[in-house]
Amino acid sequence: MTTSPSSTADRTQLGAPRAGGAGTLGRHTVSRIGYGAMQLERLHDDRAAAITVLRRAAELGADHVDTAQFYGDGYVNELIREAYRPADGVVVVSKVGADPDPGARLPIRPAQRPEQLRASVEDNLRSLGLDQIPVVNLRRIGTTGPRIRATGDQVVALEDQVAAMIALRDEGKIGAIGLSGVTEDELRRALPAGIACVQNAYSLVARDAEPVLRLCQAEQIAWMPFFPLGGAFPGMTHVSDVPAVAAVAESLGVTAAQVGLAWLLRHAPHTLLIPGTTSLAHLAANIAAGSVELPEDALAALDALPTHSTDLPIDPAGD
Ligand SMILES: NC(=O)c1ccc[n+]([C@@H]2O[C@H](COP(=O)([O-])OP(=O)(O)OC[C@H]3O[C@@H](n4cnc5c(N)ncnc54)[C@H](OP(=O)(O)O)[C@@H]3O)[C@@H](O)[C@H]2O)c1
Picture 1: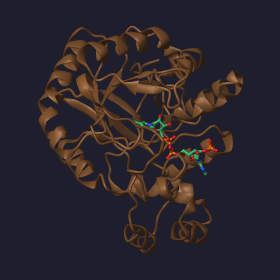
Picture 2: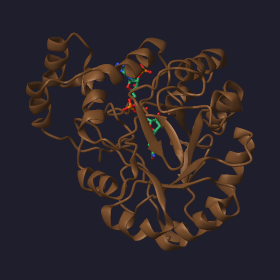
Picture 3: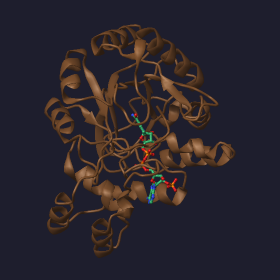
Picture 4: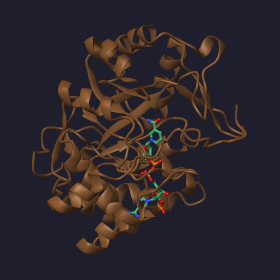
């Protein structure tokens, strides 16, 4: 599934124009617009439809895909294994730091310990059918998160986790190390390991992670915000819900989601996007957002929008 030298700055390995232009993800040249596969959990009863979304993403020029073993307890990884061949040149980015917890109200649990990170890489290798996962994000789970929290032996020093990730990279099981859910201080402390990308929650309407974005920019690390459209969990603010974004979209003859994605691309040049969708129409629109030009007045209006927190009780009853 990983890229071979036949992809270029202009075209993906499948020959598609690069969605949003070319970007850098570790040692890979990728399109700036990729695909976040988490939403495919919702298509658990329609495998064919899920595979079609993955195939279409690559055909339209999105040549990196974000996943995790805990997306549908391996289901999403298996879809990726089935959908892509090495000749497609799709760079797979997975994450460790949580494990599936099937049957639980929230079907994931923290798995932060170094040996659990290693076991999760092995699970990902098996379900993805790969010898090496091109990029793996260490998903840090803090002690105060709204959705899942680390307690007891799950509170692990960053340095111990990064050492485990370096060992996995040295052994060739992962190609590059990314971080997710990190503070500016944590990113700074991990820099000596060589960090390919950072995934934190961030969008046009939720910009609390701006300092981490700026550090990524200074260090030439790919910034791959999750929830780039505002996310899909109840209580989160989606870019389409914000009247000022809708007004800009209407003036440009595009959709609010496209404005949100175009703003992210314009805001910081090292940004790579992983919007999630189960809809072929939304997928095409998200990739087309790479061609949306934001005039200066629209940009100024968008820059001035208030920012909403992503730190919401997504699972209010959860501990
Ligand atoms: N590192 C981490 O901890 C972490 C955490 C969460 C997510 N992620 C990754 O980040 C990816 C993106 O986050 P996300 O999927 O949660 O949120 P998102 O991309 O911000 O938003 C997805 C939501 O927006 C809708 N949508 C997508 N395109 C649209 C369009 N053009 N117009 C209107 N609505 C649209 C989707 O519904 P439809 O299906 O109806 O289009 C879905 O409800 C995930 O898929 C996952 O791979 C990583």
